[in-house]
Image (tube, rainbow, N blue to C red):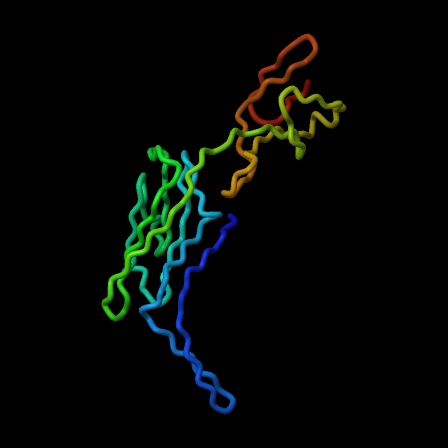
Length: 184
């Protein structure tokens, strides 16, 4: 899965040079939440995987809320967000965390909500459109797989499982179960 990491760090660093060493001190009140999700877009109809971390803060001191279904995936800092029930085109994720010094911080991140596009068929590795025609031999047909993929989809986008399809022949239409052709 591809992730776009967005870092919101505003750290004040103080450098003190001494012979052969550099010491950096960071103010813990400048911590910012890091949210990892592809392009700040969440999709309706799926559980969107989100990773949230705050530098210097234990995952147990971070809580999140958002519209729709927002739940932990079982791993620290890993969440699943389903926005199917959200009718707006944007959604806000609220992150609340407590710094080691006891200070409580709240951050708000906004995400665009998109519908998942329609899947397009692929014959082998070739994109197929509406009424696309191919000149294939019997050997080609025997080895080819019919797949489906969603274009313009930033989430992990492997081929989708094809359970059945129709093959239109000049004088007949075949309904085929699975994603390969039986011997004809």
